[in-house]
Length: 202
Image (cartoon, rainbow, N blue to C red; front, side, top):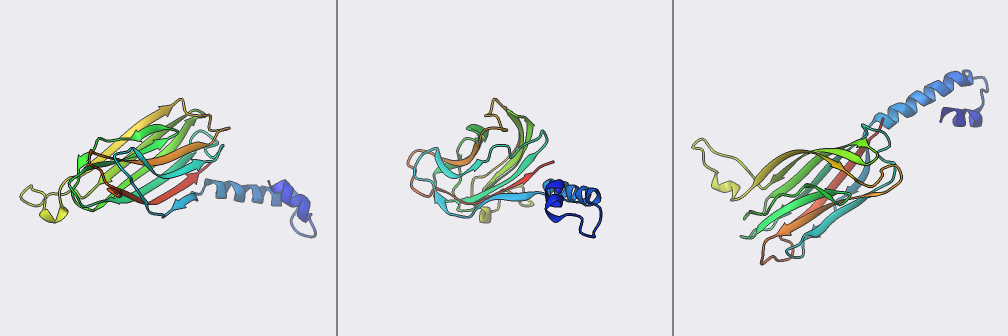
């Protein structure tokens, strides 16, 4: 990279080109190693029925996870409708679930979050470490859930290797969030209103 810039600039009384090239290559390496945002979406997308309904979706460009150890930092967020229907959210990488809990009776209109690190193991496999929070969880000093927290909720922590995915060097990969609602579902039982994805390369 540095040599391309040097050929354009020439030495012109400054440092010799090999020194400048080395510094530019150091700068490029430093920038590549910094997390950088590759996707953000704050649009409001509602579930439409029982599902699974696709909410936010992002197509990861080919060769984004270029080297083993490159990783994505993912933050998904949304909320649930206030009703007595059972609900959940799921997350996928190249059509494979890394978060897919069963539905839970979540009655209050609080939020949900899925946060994940997705690291390349090889051109066709990744490791996903994630946590999912659905609704508010907590207990008071008597060991009971305060009524202000509503009813129903989950906390999951998972670590999975996904294998057999499309070759990351030459293929795009779809990342998506889906909603699932029990029978009797209505529109907007599950809402997604945030996706932020950052890429860190070596």
